[in-house]
Length: 459
Image (cartoon, rainbow, N blue to C red; front, side):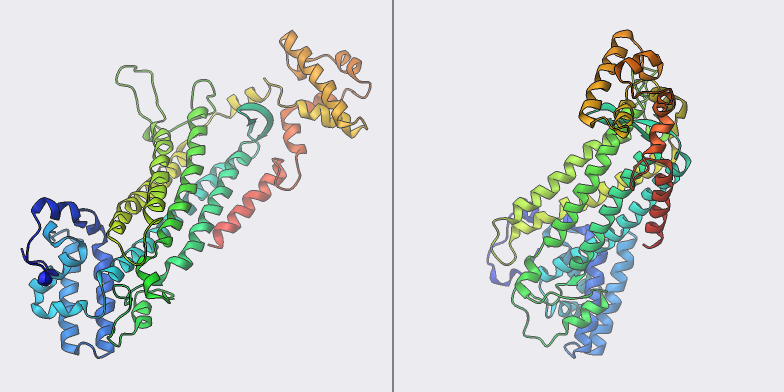
């Protein structure tokens, strides 16, 4: 098969070499973006009198025909035509004749592929931002139902202080809020057009890059043609933000896995998001949460892979950059799927409030209240800390908890203790009293939910 660029060559590559160098097995994902870019390009060429009105109309009709075929998955791509651009050019010339070859006037595959990826990533970034909002809403809905549900709070995976379950869920809401902001900010650098930059140096044709950028919905153009065709910062920025999204989801995955275990039994996941065992009939495994936790590594890998790919490349385009696409596609698919899974998991999970309440009465997570109690009466906190530590040790030796300890033990430890200490030690009191801004107190949690609702409404 004659190559569309083969005029300078006297020898054809062997089939296995063509197969190794071809990107069409994966960059066919960009077919709609490539046609979208071509439609804008041909309209600009006609506006600049580089193509006649009839030529542009014929090419436009041909491209629209290809777009319909693409949407119906009726195009049969060829490895011999290497990539999505040459495949479409071949389809176009087959459809409308040699005039199809004029479409490539004033552009290169280098600026063409960069344009395709800008369009693709812009579309999917916006879709991921919508998915984040949906997950945030799911977190808000659950939080609103569990403001006064108390759960042990942890540090070092050791029980620390009792907190509102809603407060715990809202921590992830605000993580996602930052993730949304990073993606939103990345659109500023993603939404610029490389089209018309040519192979690296621009073109001799009197094109109007700003017009084609406007047609494609871009905010502006790259000011430097070398930068336009070699820049992949916008993909790296997306992958960086995606890595942070997956890190947040992975942390929540770990908590869901722990909470749904028999040892914790804080929540039960809906059957849709769990699987059984082929040998142990009693099992209900949190496989979707585990899978999201596992998929986090592949998103990190895609990010590091592209960083490594680009670090030694001279300007402008190099064939190495063909390897920038599969990781981008995979990251988009993985992040979208992971967020959707979590939205459903949060929406449908059952919260075992009675188990949580029981557990907050069966630990020493209220110990800090004793130290604060003594400190509020004038005892230096460090001395109060030691007094309470000894009381905890007494309880451990007796196999009881602080609420079970007789008042005599308290007054012997410090004359500052009075009968009100038992009310102070109640988990509900512990939580309510933490009413500082951003704290777990019920009043603060209600404010945080309203703040979250306002944040979503402003998007």
